[in-house]
Length: 389
Image (tube, rainbow, N blue to C red; front, top):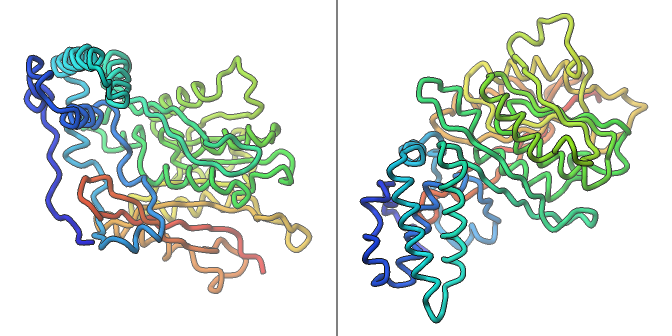
């Protein structure tokens, strides 16, 4: 199969891109379905670079590797269009007319109708403030888990004057790591055989997808004494993170787990002599996704882990798996120097003894979500832990 190289259509205003309302009845079902899909790109887009590709699929297509999963022109355009009151109002009128038309057909295209009605709810609800609510569903196979781990998150609009507001967005690496947790909880230490009072920490949590997915797994497995802590640095990100945690683990509900968020300054933390709870004790599991985008981040993270990742009492302790930092980062040229610092800061297990080391590295391929067939995003999944042998 040959890679298709034509570029996908760029996002344009719905008022100029959609067929006129008066012409809806003349469009084919396929064309109307495409129009609804186009509006979904604006008001409920998929996280780019988050759809994992299995090896059997990769064998069938010639792939083109891409790094373009940062803040692309289309992402910025979607943010602007979601916040545009006129375009949102036009989209609502267009969708309402579409629903009226479809409801009168002898053979109603149910999927298109359902998608249109859900978009009406989104456009009239959180999207009206430029806020994006996403529903994530990760397949689960553990017998004590439901068929999927479901998470609802809110992304807040990017602030073009604050680069660090990217933490209020959900990125592909978080989806990759959350999916891995749902698929194989035991490899993260999420089992009923785990030590009581398991402590789980997420670094650079952003919207909290990874930690919340872990919390849902821990809750479903009945690990009711576990404590989860999601951390970030920026106030706006922490406010949204706290809101996402509350919406997935309501205070009046019987969640069975302790889940909280705290501010963590990677640069300052290792130098501080006294830490407030719960960062005053080390953690059994540390999670991080898409958190290395400055050259110094790997060094700061390592310095934090030396205090935050529990060190096994070797050789008397034989927990499976041992305390581990699970890190997923995208491999992209725009941050090549930054991502390569992981392997320069953390030695391999063969190179170090008595310190933190890379225990394993796995490459994961995902569809780039760019609309170009065969375009792939690569992620590196590191497991980092204490090498005490």
